[in-house]
Length: 56
Image (cartoon, rainbow, N blue to C red):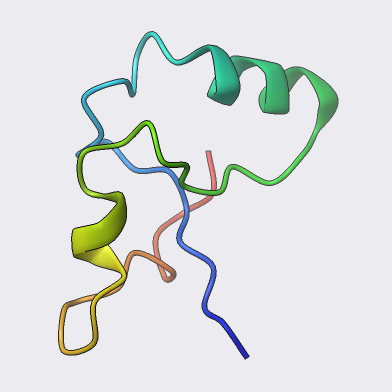
């Protein structure tokens, strides 16, 4: 089963992301998307995952 990565404050789009705003307005999960520069880094094996961080 794949681990979900949640959007976090490390993302360069954190404060101005349209996707995050859109999902928040609809009560959807704040999953990390490919717009984030850390998207591929955080998902690599052996790296600390962002799955345990709070959902915003």
